Length: 112
Image 1 (tube, rainbow, N blue to C red):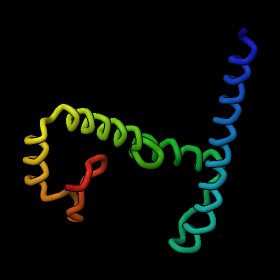
Image 2 (tube, rainbow, N blue to C red; image 1 turned 30 degrees about the vertical axis):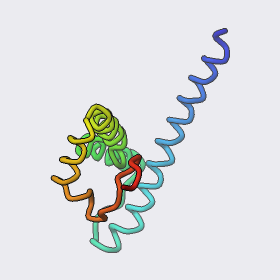
Image 3 (cartoon, rainbow, N blue to C red; image 1 turned 180 degrees about the horizontal axis):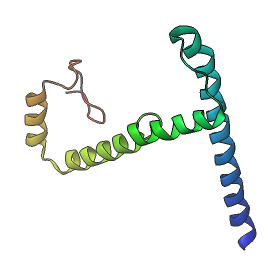
């Protein structure tokens, strides 16, 4: 019973390590290709590129867009929408002027 789960864990760890190594190598290559030429800056070695990735993670939070936060926010808004009465929904639509300026029916709502 432990075999498949342990193998998945090992595969995940190996994939994560390879992803970090490849990402670091890409950052190092891009930096060394662009920065010295464009800004007369220093070149990086592998450890410095890894440090740059860690620093960007600390300063910026996630690598890439904060998808988890958006999904959570959308889920909360969908729950609130489901709990509203039709009159409350109409008031909310009137207040926000039909969404993002397109004026069509919102997602999940039939056209009137």
